[in-house]
Image (cartoon, rainbow, N blue to C red; front, side):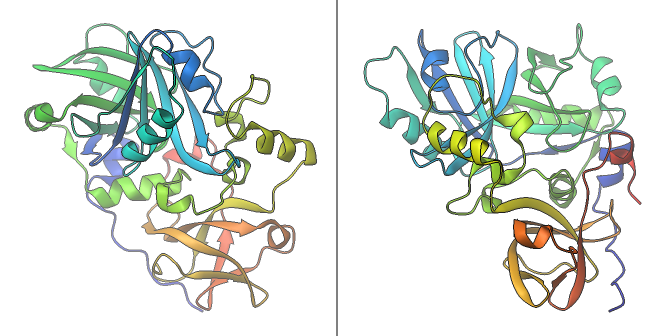
Length: 332
């Protein structure tokens, strides 16, 4: 089948790779855990190691249920009065409820703060220079490190984040202040990006959204072991399953990015290999980076170990190897 020509780049996409641009991240999940025992308490419910996390630092981790199935992927950041948990949309109430369910005597307060806080993505090869020219002091440099300050007249917290590709920043502010922050970006000449550009960056970066974490997904299936799982920390909810998988050496599915030689299919399209179902697309876009449609899917490991000749709706599809840092700035 002849590949379909890729759709035009969404507005702001190229700036979010090669220059600098901004986009609101609507509906971002925000859970605050405050109190003397916040660090110790949350450490019992995530695959990330929090015990020695200093103020101003952060880590990526999974929250799982007692069976080890993933509830959420989140950035967990140490702030002055506890922890700030940041995740993609639709997870705040669930995460806050999950933690509160296990809260007994600990000196903690768990808050679903999604309605009070908002987030903006500032990304691109020139994003750090652009922000540094308008920020007092150094910017956070390592993923999920963060600093509080002001952009224009708005109080913000800037978080270094590579979730949408290298060199990005998530700017967190009070929800009521987002219009003023957007006006300031416009006045400063920063390019706005469309939601489709952010979604393309997310998919190209292999960042699993809630839609990608289907029922009974295991942490190691999402292929973020080095980033999000500490195999040497103490007990936490779901650890028995994670440790058992680590001992066995493999899982039966792996999270992969596919380039598809056709127009982007709808989520839910079946990925086949040799005529057999191998997985289901959970996120799709037209990818400027790949020059084709792209999709994320949990694929059966037994098919990945074969030739890897996949199809979606009769169109050829191939697994895309993770890009190097240099390659991630190219958009084909």
